Length: 193
Image 1 (spheres, rainbow, N blue to C red):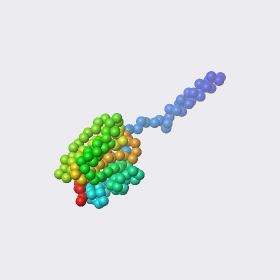
Image 2: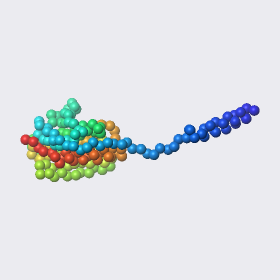
Image 3: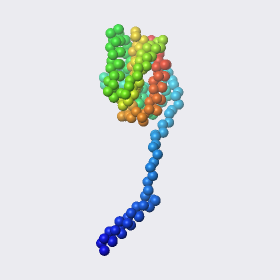
Image 4: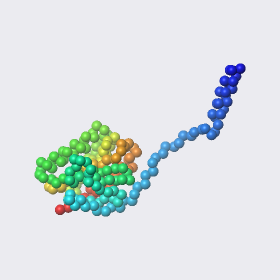
């Protein structure tokens, strides 16, 4: 008799579990929808630091809060995207100082070589300055960096970081959007007297 009760309970529970109310269906893969703001630029003057550039309306600039930051180190915050462009400006003192800044910039980029799938160097030649724009592909902390200089007085370095750990696939559209802003900054950069 106990066998029949146990068997009947099992059959009853199987029938109850097959009802259409408890069925789950696989969901299609979803992606986060990103609303990109309109690109409207205004000239931003770094008066004490002797340069200016065009800044998008959805970004703002503040002095770098890092305790060891120098006088002309500023951060451009892209708040809607959780990203920060760190800008470091220095006056060129002499030829040796310029080469030291070149080497420091290159070292900062190539610290990421262990995590990068590739590092692409794009040379910048402008009548007012020259430099290198680096694109870092892979699981690196930074995805884009640059330096520009007129080789006599001004040196500006920039590096883009997201404020959270990132996955290359998930940030790719936002990264393209912000890289366009970085390139626009470089195209509109002017040295001020």
